[in-house]
Length: 204
Image (tube, rainbow, N blue to C red):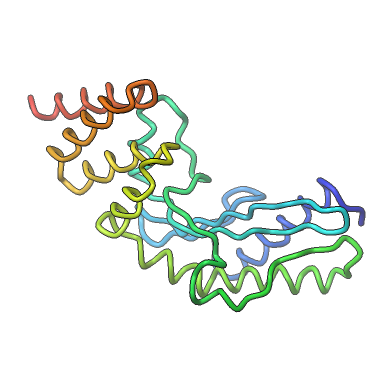
């Protein structure tokens, strides 16, 4: 099998097959996650890098908080299950630091490729799920999202949504108004409909 895009697809497909064998939901050919409860999924991110003679997978793991990301999509950006609400590289977790990197080479046998894909899947099923469960609540998720506010990229929207879903609607309003004043060009598209939502509920 030659390297390149087709090899990349075949490896990701194989990793998803191995994740599915361990109980993960393969909701698309190249996407898997694990539902922890109705609102939180263990998110799987198989970031890839193609090299001259190999392909590397940088495994990311985290949480997809369904209601947080649906509410954050008030800015008109389509809600996507495949997007992480919050994620980190698996290799940064204490339970995964001793694992060697995940490289795949086109000349490897099917058995070796499958073995490496299975090793990756097992790491997600153990260390990854353990981490995801530890942050699968709004109380745990909020301070993590707040740490990334300066990144923009959806984090301010998720902070506002998280506060709202925690029932802290006054805090959600104050945060949104404050962040809108600081970053109007970035935040207005979300802030206006979100503040309208809060105002409408206040008038009910």
